[in-house]
View (cartoon, rainbow, N blue to C red):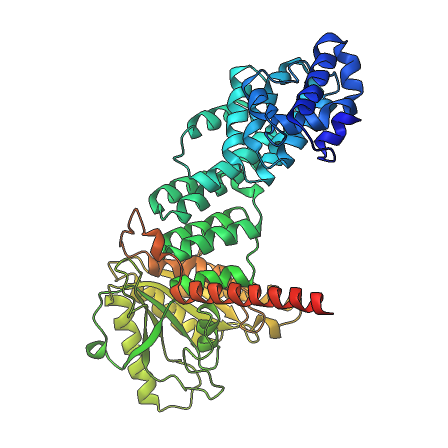
Length: 521
């Protein structure tokens, strides 16, 4: 009882009495039966543990230099776990190393419980380095560390110290020897990617990202992939964002609104109208890749472009047929200062259907179409839009034939995709299947490739955004190499950082006001 009182600082007094307390506890420990001592730890544990942590008199420094008190632990490990908890509560977790000597004396199950508790407690207190030292101690003494605890420490160490930290290879080799499942490997790979991106190490991040291909990446969820894409976006790496997008498509991870917002905000940072061309002579220079959208009037070209680019009024959106009457070129990311940012053209082509325009104008459009598809070197992908309410009509068939004849003369391989629009207005599943079958037959009759992809979309319900981006990314592969390293100080948005500081200041002021109000009332 006197020892407990000293531990709680309820009894002050001379240094002599403190030494008497310590001596009595040591006498019980070393002269009596050890099992009996640890069955009644209330006689000595609080005072001894506090002295060992250096919080109670002159005995603290002395006991820190001596051997650990729990060199022989009880069979269930309760005394060792209690001592670990007291040391952690003493706000001097570095003293925990003196208790590790008792681990070999425990049973396998009890040792696993103590290690799990110890490592979780250290991670909770953000003492990652001490957790790594504990694992190294266990490795040197042939003590098996639970796989879950080792994975948690490894993830925390990667996040706080980076992938090149001292001792990282040793931890990874210990972890590999465990024969961990794909889920744990995917978590570690994701942590490595995020740690590299936090330090601006783009090249290393892309290397670790490749590990998520195959069965391993299927264990990750949508939230983790969105974090990875967002981190690549802060590094202005469209290659990393698109590679993450391809991995998600490979593992059939369904993207949400946030995913597409990240992709569109990174790939389409800024859009400006360049010019409207009416002939080959009035086209802009073919220096940048181009993605072309074509189809009958009122088929929904402008709405589709606005949907995939996450914009509201990027192109003309109107129910008046023939509103788009030129080859409208939009320059994407034209004013970006970063040299590695992808620049490309979105081309909104006029309809060739029942638009209320003169017949001579339609003839000019067809000639222009033919020349554009045959000779345009910068054309990468040609999206032909078909109204899902009606299916392919005669004008759609003519455009398919025009592409089949003209694209074969183009020295560059131009990708072709059929986009069926307004599928939200085609409610019946049977009707949708009928439209798909009709489009397939029409493609075959027009002489197009039978493997031409057919995409179902709806600008109202955002259906098909992922499928369209799957082919739109062809316009982003222009051979520009991204840097291996990005300055970490330039990753964050300056205005965003200032806003965070302002919000934190306001939060502190609000908290102080609340405390003052509580005192008053």
